[in-house]
Every structure is written in C-alpha cells, then in structure tokens.
Image 1 (cartoon, one colour):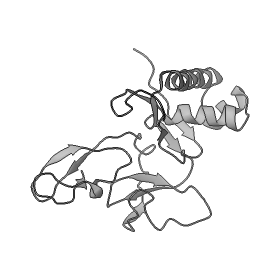
Image 2: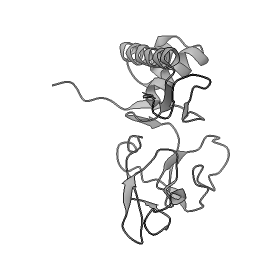
Image 3: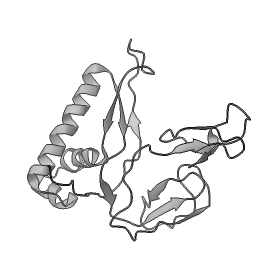
Image 4: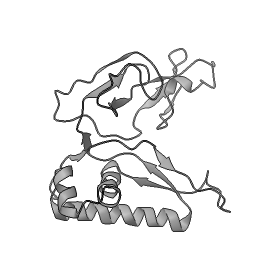
Length: 183
C-alpha cells in the first residue's frame, strides 16, 4: 500500500482558473481538458517564474526535493500536452493548503484566502457576497480544492453537479426558474 500523500504548501493561488486555446479547428467545448493541480501550478510558478532551483522550491512547498521534481515534471508534461494538442487547462484540485488565513462564503460555499495580505476580506471574490466568515481550521488543513458539491434548487429540489468557477446562485433551475444554492 502506498504512503499517504502529504499536504503541499502553496504560497498564493493562481489569479486565473485556467487557459483556453483559440483559433484552432478543434471544437474546444467538446475537447478534453487538462487538469493542472494547484501543487503543479505552484511548482511551475516557483521554478520557472520565480527562478528557484528545485531545492529552494521544495523548501518553499515543504516537500522533499525528489517529490518537487516529480510534481514539476508532471506539470510540464501536462502543459506540453495541452499546448501541442490544443486542449484547455483547468487549474484546480490537489491536496494543498495555502499559507494564509482562510475564509468561507456562506452564499456560494467557496473557500478562499487573502491575495493581498494587507487588505481585509470584505466580499467573496467569486460571488461578491458579504456573507463571509473565517473558515474553521480546527482540522489539520482546509479541504482539498476541486469542483465537488452540487447546486440545488431550494424550491423544487432539482440538483446538478457544481461547476467550478460558477456561483450556484447564478444558475437557474430548469423546472421552476428559481436560483440554485450550493449544497
């Protein structure tokens, strides 16, 4: 049985949730997507953008150097595949934690942290709601980030899988035309 995967530290979340190719003959709506995990994004950011060597980057992410090298190689392979095959890249998922305070939006259910650590958190960056609170971090780390959850209609009970990056409150129920909520 493999060892349990350790949490990987990410200093800052990406400012975007992915990339989409344009100008190709491929139908991007039906094309397969490449999912780049947050820790893979962080490895690329530290090594290629910040110019750190693998030892420095591994210290920053609090993983071993061989682990960082593996994460980095997987990230580069995924980016190369997306580039060559014209696939979109979606950045999400992974067993990670950020090195700052966490907040939870009660309106859309998203978890987020403070990008500019000097400014107070007033509104949810996803749905712009002011119904936010400091996330309870009594657990070891916050939950992993993925597109888990469902959007549910509180009126008729209709439910569908949550779409990452789209607040449930912007989704309309096809049956009763009410606004959906994250569940």
